[in-house]
Amino acid sequence: MGMETPELFDTHAHFEGTPEETASAVARAREAGVAHIMAVGGSGPLNRGTEGFAFRAIGWDRDQAGKELPPLDYSGVAAVGEIGLDYHYSPGTRLSQMDLFARQLELARDKNLPVVIHTRDADSDTLGLLREIPSRGIIHCFTGTPAFARDLLDLGFYVSISGIVTFRAADNVRESALTVPDDRILIETDSPFLAPVPMRGNPNEPAFLVHTARFLAGLRKTRLEDFARITTANAFKILSSGQPQR
Image (cartoon, rainbow, N blue to C red; front, side, top):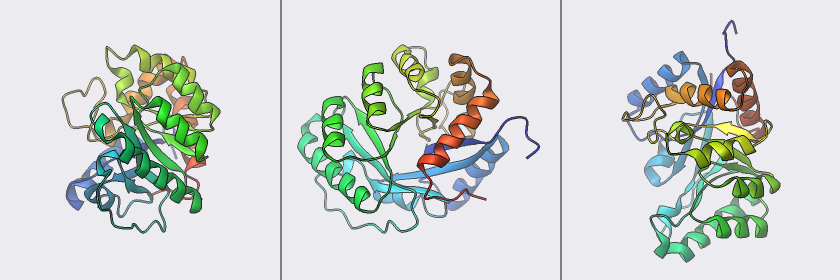
């Protein structure tokens, strides 16, 4: 490709803007070396925002628990997501969150698709459902303990690290990131949220992935070129039903 570094793969980005805004964000990402992006849903608007991407994940996130939800067309998608549990903000909907999560794990298994999972302050229930309904996929924006990371790795999951790893107070994320082996680590922006240092305070976007990649390469004592190659290869491996965006 004539590039100094291999192409980066942002495995988790949300798009709710106009088509023109999305196209501009994709163009800036490519200019920064982010050649591949998985657009991720989770709500009606976010699911619609994935349209047109070669790598797409659609589904219903924890905030949709207890709602009347329309069926989705999963043809041509790379994964089901984001789905999962979050008791940090919504502990009162625990049972309905678990029900929605379980139903989508079953759906993904029926369709032979990987899942993209959000889990926060819900370690025990997340592990319990994943042991009950064997699945494959990505734990996105990992913020848990190294012990939780090892449990998820034992279940076969890939662990994706976001820009939170660059935050001053995120020692636990850095420790967990060092727990994940080369063949299971992924990187993401979770844009428009969680812009990494030195871009904090701005709406996040896929172009900023390079800052997280550079930080993690330094943390793991490897060259950026090697880390980019490893994480991009891992993304293609788990999202093998998709095709690279050109």
